[in-house]
Length: 140
Image (cartoon, rainbow, N blue to C red; front, side):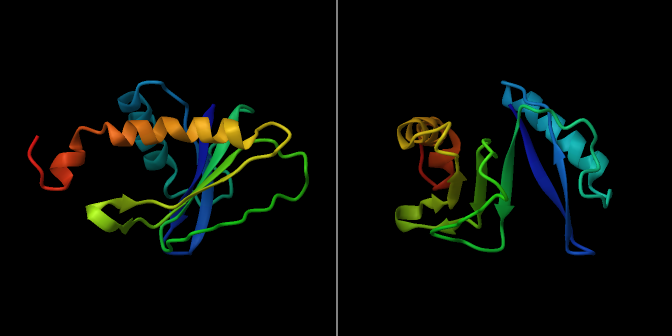
């Protein structure tokens, strides 16, 4: 699936929604993301990048606020795609970095069991992140 996300226009306080083509290799995906942001960061339309694929999902950021809960409602009950919302990170106990994440899923297509299994994947990657010790000032 391809992520759909917003670009914030500082001058106007408005957002534009764009998407980037998924790649399994992070460096490839990151280059695509940077190219899309570079191409559309000045475009002031709601969806300036054409051709949004059907197999996409929404990623939303609220970097101005940390939260413990976030509720997002869609206009009807037929919206089956997940929506991921992240907020401002904060420093936690033991020099931990805490990033709030709210996930909106439709129960018709996802149970809590499946969501917890999915969320285990990024947690596993973060736990194994090679830069984690260096970021804390620890030696490896």
